[in-house]
Amino acid sequence: MDCGFSPPLYLPISSFLLLSFLLFYLNQVFSTLNTFLIPAAGLAAVSSLFAFFRLLKLRPSRRVLPVVWSIGNDASGSDSNRGVSGSGTRIAREDVVFYGNGDVYEGELRKGRCSGSGVYKFYGKGIYEGDWVDGRYEGYGIESWARGSRYRGQYRQGLRHGFGAYRFYSGDCYAGEWVGGQSHGNGVQSCSDGSYYAGEFKCGVKHGFGRYCFRNGDTYSGEYFGDKINGFGVYKFANSHCYEGSWHEGRRQGFGTYTFRHGEKRSGEWDNGILKCSLVPSDPAIERSVEAARKAAENATLLPQVEDQVRKTVSAANKAATAARVAAIRAIQNHKKGKFCDI
Image 1 (cartoon, rainbow, N blue to C red):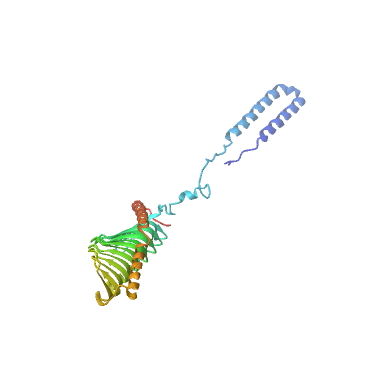
Image 2 (image 1 turned 135 degrees about the vertical axis):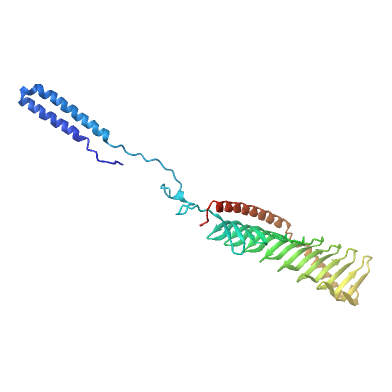
């Protein structure tokens, strides 16, 4: 773009031709002056050319703009300001949030709420490391408490939901399915004394079909109700004795058969664990009860295995926790540099 006015190039040429024609005309009229007019014409031509080149020299050159490469909406550099606020303060995705009760969140935010990967530290209680959506646990994560308990697994809307493993500070452990923050579905509950239960759960307690191995070597396979042996099932003692029949709240109740290790049998109607009325093993009521107990024991052993699914879920939870720790480190660095989250 030109910065000043420059006369057209044809003006000096026209002036030169006009002056030459005038001098030639005068030369014909005043031939006596020929000696003086020819040098004057030459001098005028030289002066005109000198003026022409002077104008060319003074003519400003066109300014060459640099080539600007950009990725974004336009080449004006508007997208280059991404991550910078209007006041020049840097904007980051990760930030540190302090709460009035002493809790601290370090990680990714969206619209002022915990979203993405992050670490939440409960003041004096514990810590959560994992996935967030709209201020709630969502996805995979690890929850650790000050007393030593730890959960690794899936979450939904802030609650343990899906597959996961919870190890209590006492040494007990539950690994299996969760619904609404409680063990619900198929799972395995292991105790610190060596006993364990593998079977169905409902609302946090043993309920349905399951198999329990006691620390003394006894085993029970059959039905549970409200965390207690209830219904039909088979109980095998470590000394090779066995009871097949009906149960109520952990005691032999109803019809059933008790078999000693040497083969002797006692059949009949039981009440609160004591044989109330003896019957022969071939009695139809005894046979039906024993058959129902054996069927329940078989169903308890045919339940789906959850160990592989829990193992995969725990691995995913560990990865989510690692990503959360990385986001927490970035959040701390951004906080120290004066960056803030405005996403």
